[in-house]
Picture 1 (tube, rainbow, N blue to C red):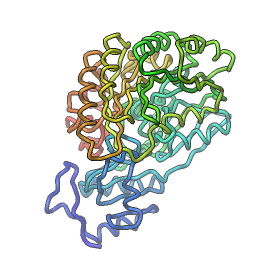
Picture 2 (spheres, helix red, strand yellow):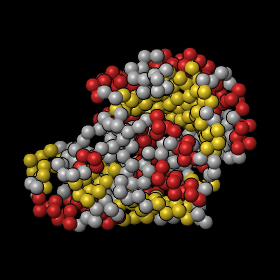
Picture 3 (tube, one colour):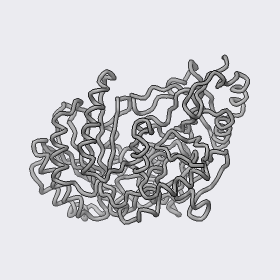
Picture 4 (cartoon, helix red, strand yellow):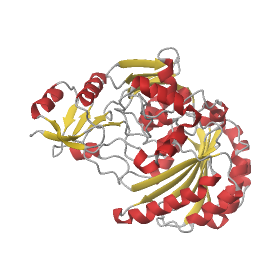
Length: 470
């Protein structure tokens, strides 16, 4: 192998930005995991992530086997001024997990999950997905809020907040976080919790990947047995009535329930409206709570039934398999106005891809009861995340699908809080600095102070970036 040209932390390629072969070999010798370079076996698979639209080529991929590898990788990146990306589950739509020309610190092989059933806690490494986490915790009849898609990584979802099916009763994923292990930009290994490095622990619950590489997460678990869950589908011709019903129904549900509503299409391309629910409680109580939904209209299909929690967790993932082209826009809403209903229904009539969806994801009653400044996630006064989720197969159709998504997002902007969910946002070049700042709300200045303390050189910048001011 030869010396390698690299991209610096500022995203530039300089003639002097070259890693000597001897330097790379020395770094490789210090890793217990695998170091991959372009052209080597496994490299192309390692740089692939869930969104098929992302095609970036890191100069180095450090597939870490443990914390020591992460520490070595962070030191190496800082010493050589390398652009850094961090991969956990690899589900982030803008592809922040993969950098062009720098070093990708890859946690995807760090898969340990240890459940403590008597304490109702679990400790999981940064490469674990929610499907893997739930597989272990459900063996003991336990779970924690973990998104709505089993293929999502625990790391990215939790660090950005973590909406999910169980949030009505138990709050967001970040609300159930007890402790983390983290490697900061200066290569230090720290523990952050409510009693140790508490300022950092606050920022990690909604501040994204701005402060370091989290190598493990400890969560509070809750009893979760079979749930009453599934989708109810309605013809798109009734979309306005269904969305208004959903608004009223979702605002009166008990804590045990959480909901998602989708404007989407069936596999044969027929457009439909779907209300999906998950009731975590006794089946009899769930049937009573779901009576208004089952009594509404004439659905095309009613798939509500008792099922394992892991089954409802895999529902969304089955509708959005890996490898497709994806472009998303996110915002939050306090209510679904009639104007919002009319705007979205009209927009869906012009959607260029039958694979695309408009999604309302409810935050959950318990999540709404937390104060905005208790965690870095500051959208507690919103009832829903609104997601314009464009998916298509042919890369040549990029322009028409992206343009539709942006147009709908722009039309909806006055009807939302004007603030996005950081887990669905891209980098500044796509989103704009003002929109990223708005996503952190009134907590932004406090997050900047944390960035100044823990990452003053902005080593971790491939994210909805909080810029240091030192």
